[in-house]
Amino acid sequence: MDKARYIMIGGFLGAGKTTAVLRLARLLEGRGSQVGLITNDQSHGLVDTALLGSSGFPVEEITGGCFCCKFDSLVSASERLSRERQPDVFLAEPVGSCTDLKATVDYPLRRMYGENYWIAPLSVMVDPVRALRILELEPGKSFSPKVVYVYRKQLEEADIIVINKIDLLSPQRLERLRGALQESFSPDRVLSVSARQGKGLEEWFEQVTQPRACTRGDLAVDYDIYAEGEALLGWLNCSLRVQAGAPFDGNLLLREAMAAIQQRIRTREIAHLKMTLTPDEQGQDIGVANLTGRDARPEQSHVLQEPLSTGELIVNLRAEADPEALRTQVQEALSALGRDGGLNLEIEHLESFRPSRPTPTHRLQAAESGVAVSQSASA
Ligand SMILES: Nc1nc2c(ncn2[C@@H]2O[C@H](COP(=O)(O)OP(=O)(O)OP(=O)(O)O)[C@@H](O)[C@H]2O)c(=O)[nH]1
Ligand SMILES: [Mg+2]
Image (cartoon, rainbow, N blue to C red; front, side, top):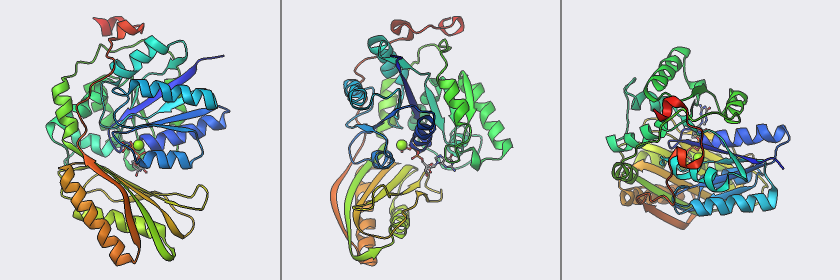
């Protein structure tokens, strides 16, 4: 049997990784492939798992740390998927605040499990509006320098940088960004896609399934700055039961919850606020709302088809702010929402924290994993 392809799609919080995973999964399924998905987060209660799970694809969730710190769980999850569904393609989404993935995930997988998996070049997705600000090509809200350090390291290790959301950009802005990314980070390729519209995905998939020599040297990462940068981000995961006496409009609830939280939270910058509302009974119906910046416009990427009477609301917030403050502000927003909307919102799980210091299970150099390193990279 051919080896299963293992495709990891990295990139900062809110870049569009989950949207792309879903699109790619559908594209591959349409070509007759069996696809297995793997999500990842610092804790449980994930919007991404709820969303991908509702799509009908087999999903495994790695919680409690990033792939690099949970390497053995990642391998077990892949083995479980292999046993149960025999995927010929794995699509894995690491936590969006994580970097150094080649040394800690890609190379160890090649070295220890190279007989089972064909490891694809690392793709790193970029939200163009965020990138234009972080690279100081355009003004606007951004993060502290240590968070920017993590962001830049993600791009520095990318084999392929994938500029997403090109539907939002003029050709001039796209060209400016593409030129700056190529010049600053010298990836093998810079591709442009719209995961939402399904544009550019075929070319991307062709690129990640071609063997190529590694054109990069090993990434130098200062783990103190990385840990501090990650810990500047407050993390909040909350799951609630929603009940009402009569069927209500779940899309309106998502919009109002988004507005109530956006209005209350005090933060330097929001990385990603995302929510799902899943009715208890309506098959695969799901509503999803997102906000990817403090001054961005909330949007609804999946709309519920029918009113509902009971369901589960999940709120995931990642923002540069004190997690305790985020907790209070989100709780206030949700209580006001329940009161004003005549709904019973009962919190089942609520936690807020700063990600702890990354301590990878393995850390290898390219040469130790048998990757063919090109002359220019090893020089
Ligand atoms: N305009 C536009 N929006 C997009 C596109 N792809 C994703 N988005 C939106 O970007 C937001 C974030 O998308 P996700 O796929 O959840 O991003 P992510 O990278 O998985 O986020 P995290 O898991 O939090 O790191 C959502 O509102 C998506 O609908 C795109 O091609 N165009
Ligand atoms: Mg995601």
